[in-house]
Length: 294
Ligand code: BMA
Image (cartoon, rainbow, N blue to C red; front, side, top):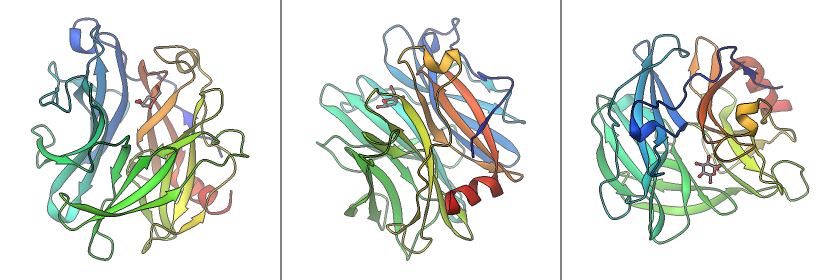
């Protein structure tokens, strides 16, 4: 099972007319809501400070952007940038939660923000401070009464739980690199929001190998206890191949923060070599079969 690249790739490129997004546009969140694809993308200008831009689309391929970022560095945690957004729709609560990485001379900090309209975001504070932690993604509903998030303590994926999205407890390792496997042997981290299916949580994750090549994999977690891995296929579902995935700001990178499912298709948005944004898709049924039996 391999994801199929969209023929119009790359679907978003740096915009030389706006300094803040003139160098790189890459890792993005995408939420499908009320018939529109809302994209939140990491953008850098020549100062290399990451900001988060917003773009919207009716077809998931052609996006119109706002001229100004919707999230820019604000406090001491963020002086060097706000990076790698993921956005979860909490449908029961009519609110959206953004998870993003704050970067400053102190290091990186996994942050939360919330919005009811997808444009104005209110900061909610960190998951944890004073440690190397990122790649956090909130599950789209509570499980056994509690919010659940992925996060990454090197080199693997972890879970944490909360009653209120402010205080996080029960930090628990979920899945690590497979040292004897050719592509996910060094580090792994979550991709976009986990997809709820009748067979479990369908999860896309990124991994890199000894040569620092980033690829994407899939796995399936138990619906009631996501700490339980139902199946983890041996092979990746996507790897760098196009020139703009092999060369850019950082070579050999496909890195995804978004996998919305629309009309039976999984839309995987990804940063190509930390410079542009690509789209690859798979029929939902095929990807789920692969995560179950691949
Ligand atoms: C990771 C993150 C991503 C980036 C990737 C490849 O650590 O910083 O934002 O796409 O490295 O450079």
